[in-house]
Every structure is written in C-alpha cells, then in structure tokens.
Length: 306
Image (cartoon, rainbow, N blue to C red; front, top):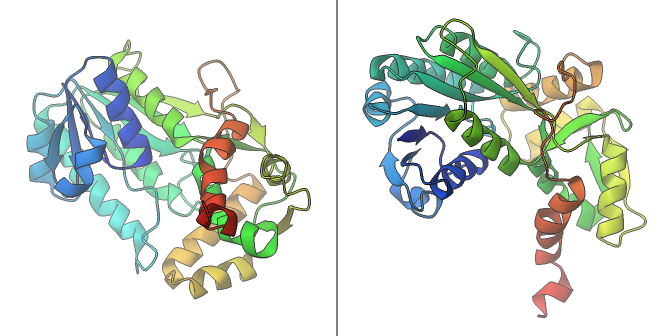
C-alpha cells in the first residue's frame, strides 16, 4: 500500500491514478472528504490536515512508500507563507519517522539546491533537508516550471492580446506538465530503490524541452489563431503591484518577485543535464491544446452561444 499526500492536487491526483491503474493499494490523503471524492477514485480516502503529525503518522502506518507534497501554490493572503510551509514540513517529517516509512518520494523544485533567495522554493529546500534525516530511501523530484502557470494568462490574452510576466523573454526554462510529474513520482515509488538511508537521490524533471516565454507565446498564438499575440516582460515593480491589486499579501507578492528575480539571474536553474530520465513526454503544444485553449474559449461569445 502506498500513501499519497496532497491527493486532490494536480500532481497528487496523477500519482493516485498511476498507482491505482497499476493495481497498487493506495491511501489518498486530503483536507476534505468532498475534495477527495473525485481525486481518490479506486483509492482509500483519508482526511488529514497537513500540519497534524499524529493523523499523518496514522495514515502512513504500514505504507510501502509515501509521496510527500508541501503545498507549492501560494495562499494569496498569507501573512507568512514560509512559516506555513515550515509547519507542514515539520509535521510530515515527524509523521514519517513515527510511522517507520522506508521509502519517500518528495515533490521538490528546480532551485531547491539553494538555501535562500528563491521565494517558496526555499521551503522545499527545507523539505529536502528534513526528509534526508529519515531512516528511509528518499528521492527528491525537482520539477521545472509548471505549464499550468500559463493558465493565469488567460484573462490577459483575452483582454490585452498579450502574455505578461516578469521573466526575460528569451530565457529558456524547463516547462513541465503537472501530470508528468505525478506519473514520474509514481514510477519512482514502485520502481527499484537506488537511494538508501543517508544517501538521498535527486532527480530533476525538465519537461519535454526548454522553452522561453517568447517561444511559448508563439506556440499559443499559433494554436489559438491569434497571430498578433505578444509577450510583454513586466518590471518587477509592476508585477508586484498587480499581484497586490489582485489580493496578494505583501509577503506573498514579495516571494513571487523573489522567484522572478532568481529565475532571471540563474539563481534558480536546472543543474542536471537533460536525459531520458529527466525528460517527460507532454509537449507545450499538447498542453495548450488540452488545457489552455479550452480555458481561453470558455468565456468567449462564440463558446457561450453553443
């Protein structure tokens, strides 16, 4: 039996699906029974708060392996998102040790090799350090830049005919689909265990190919039949102002700005060479066709008339 934390999220639900389809017993953890109902199909749903070490330990008892996810998405109005991450990391580490789990796969991030200056990725650096102390074989999957982040551009595309972000236009980034991360995590959980207690394994996941924001914009414009679509690099100040206007706290907006600066400067960067292990299958073209175009069309007059 395998335990999947964050089972209602994009990566967690993919881990559950992959394990269930392979015939493995799965215990799917989430914060509410209602949210788990669709995500835990074929699995045993378990409601547990991510900061409740006792409940987490009980859920992980007897598990062959555990997929560990610390919330990667910002809580927009959080006054101290790093402290929130810290509480989850500590609870999960205590729970895994108490349950005697011997195989752990974590969702980490590119840039987690850096201790600071990386926004919320610093919380995943801490996750790696803390789980490295377990008497378990630990694998850290350092995922690249999630394609799903592009879904936040839908309104800008509709309203302004542009994609606006604080990243350097021609900077290649390892764009990856969340589903591919989840499926890779499932394979690592059930596959051979190259890592051993005290010698954690780090695997970067680079997506199908590196892409700049300018290249991504070209792909979206072509597939959406928007030849005039352009990419506009925002200043950090403008980016922060827009996040604050949208309801982000000063703390969260500052963390988001720190990520942008770190990516642009190379402080957050892929360190491992691209290989068959680090490359995942979903192309940006497939993601745009399956996820972004339906979102883009959902509010269009043409779609509403159907």
